[in-house]
Image 1 (cartoon, rainbow, N blue to C red):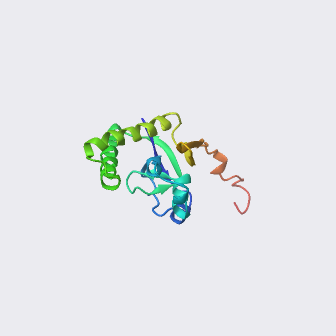
Image 2 (tube, rainbow, N blue to C red):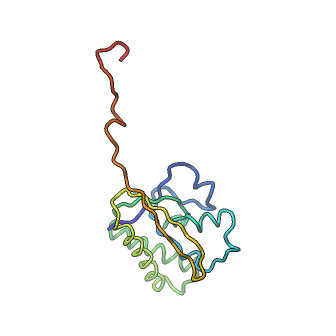
Image 3 (cartoon, one colour):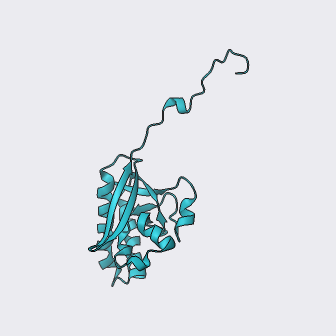
Length: 162
């Protein structure tokens, strides 16, 4: 089974999101956060979170990129518990037990998306508001194998200066 972890190439997420996800935390789409939004909600950092942000399952912050990787079933169970508690605390779900089913569905959608890709594949999300609600689309960037020439030092050890 695969899921995705937040990955950062620079500090830009700390500038564009109110609450950036922590590097390495498990992530899901998190589009549910925007289900009742309108154009009026789409300003500043909130717009960036809506448009391009994956949701971290530990900090509940946002990240622009995630990388596909293996996850253990026990980790999925722990994430489901954490998400269920978040649904109760933030969204007013009636109980952790009822919210857990929704949390498992969110995780299942993300594992289905990730299972289609090789490990280390990068994923991005793009959202837009439509007449029928929030529409999400995903883009993948395949992991590139590093060539030896990126690490090798070329030259002749017998030449002066080498």
